[in-house]
Structures are given as structure tokens and as C-alpha cells.
Length: 332
Image (cartoon, rainbow, N blue to C red; front, side, top):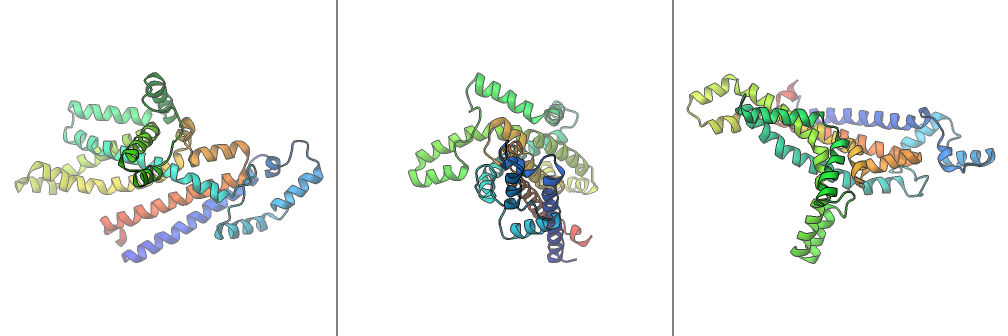
């Protein structure tokens, strides 16, 4: 199978997955208790008023008609309007998306910057204090709930020492960059510093589990590669140990790590709900929680569709990179 056919096959599979996500999201409205009319109609609404609201929302149509209408509207970029604010769902959701992506990318950068060096050190210094320290850190990181860690970081670094803000987001990275371009380097440096102050605690909280997971994966992969015959052969040729470890062993170790990195990035985009709630981060997670509490179905559905589609896109990119690095994947 050629690389192009492989990408085409994965793309078609991705479309099927997105269709499945859309279908499940559509059915959520009908399998959950209550009605969408309850979110719009006053508490003392008469049956006639409730019927009129249902007709305006298209809820009086047969289920299959509502489903086909929903698919057609999505294909045309129409995700409906918020029951609460009347704002277009697509406008509201996509305005919150950059904050979630920003948080997910920052968490991934922190995780990658810490986990791969820790994994390599742990593997190359097996059964030494550095290995035990890295293993303990991984165990603690995987076992610690994100919401608890976020609250502890707020109490310690925000409330107790006042180093970081407790919650919110002053502006995004793009806005900070625009300030640097329009107002000069001094103003840009200050804006970037403020951006870092607001995003540090949420990114550390969200990336801790990710860091622990990649550390353990890198360690196990390095140990496996260092025991392979090609490593012994390169050492027998007299190559420096640093070259053996980092050019040969680590390079082969990173192939499965890249796959997990991509999958976890998609998970971070959808899994930032709790972290965003703890830090009042204005992203998709906070939007999703607010929509659930208000039973604002258009916003809820649009948020889930965007998160699911983003996860599929990230997986497609990971498959493409993985197949490029390991051509055997294409041949299988």
C-alpha cells in the first residue's frame, strides 16, 4: 500500500468516526432526562406555549427528520443558536477553542520537556537514585487527581505566596504577540510575562499525568532498545556512548512515544474540562460545564462535536507522522 492510499484510508475512517460522534451527540438530547423545551420555556409556561416553542425548535418533527436536518445544518456550518444568549453556537464555541488548544499545547510542551529527559536518565541509570526518583515521580504523577493538584497549587503558589493568579486568563498568546508587534518589545515582554503567569498553573496541572505517562513509556522503550543487538554492535564498533543512546536507541524509542503524544494531545483537548473548571479558564471545558448546567443543547452539542472532530484530526496527523517514520506501518 502506498503512503497516499494509507492516508486516504485513514481519512475515510476518520470521516466515519466523526459521523459516529455527531450521531451520538445528536441522540444525547433524547436519551437524557428532561426536554430541550424546559431550558427555554418559563417555569409557568402553558402547554400551548410549550408546544409553540417545540415547533419553533423543530422538536415536533419525527426523530429521523430532526436528525437529517441536524446533519444538513452541520454540513453547512450551522450549529444552531444558544437557548440562553441567542448567540450562534459555532461563534461561541470557536471563540473558546483557542484557549483550550493553547492550554493543551502548553501542557504538552511541559510534559515533553520533562518526561523524555527523565525517561532517558531513568533508563541509562537503572537501579540508581536517579532511576528511583524518576519512577517515584511517575507513580505520584499518575496517581494524583488533576483537580486536587490544581487546588493545592492554587492554595500554595497563588494564595500563600501570591506568585501566580488564582484563576482566569488575561489574554491569549496571539494577543500577547500582537502587543509585541504593535507596541514594542517592552510592552510585548510584559504581555508575554502576564500570559505565562496565567497559564503556568493550569498547564502544570493538566500536564502532570501526561508527564508521568511519557516518562514511564520512554524509560521502558529505552531499556528495550538498549538491550537490542544493534546497540551492542554499535558499541563494539567503538561509537561514543552518547551517540549510541541518543542517535540510535532514543530515536527508535520515540516512534511509539510520538504516537502516544498525539493521542494524549487529543485527550488533553477533551480532558481539560476539570482543569478549566478549577482555574476558570475560558475554554471549551468551561463552556461545556456551563452548557450542561443550563441545558443549553446547541452549545453542548457544538462543543462535543468540535472536541470529537479535533480528536480525530489529531489522530490522523499522528498516523501520518507515524507512517512516515516507520514505513512498515503502510505495508501492513
